[in-house]
Image (tube, rainbow, N blue to C red; front, side, top):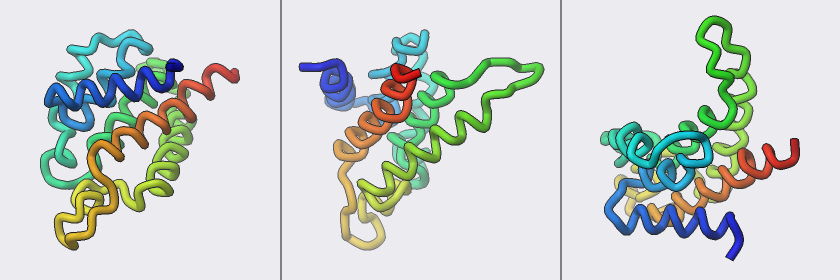
Length: 142
């Protein structure tokens, strides 16, 4: 099993332990960016269930969290990394939409239409694939 498969399995493991989608994805990658799993778990708790209001998918919120951790320069006085981070997030969002047809939890789960576009496990796997492609592999290529 390669590193990518290990991370995707880690996402599944966190979800099986009752983490929400945002927590499962964020916790699986937190250590790669100097964060503890507990801090990621706490930070992402309110992002589950589409931010608890069926809005942006929690797995997508976790992608944004990881993109920021991976790319932000952390310069509070003169941040120069925002546009680069936005570019990463746009690429990951486009990938997610291509695979799942939406970024919105209620649409993905078919809450209003009865048509499920993607299950939570599928959304988390897509998020992990996007993180691997646009964050991890992109960093390795630099």
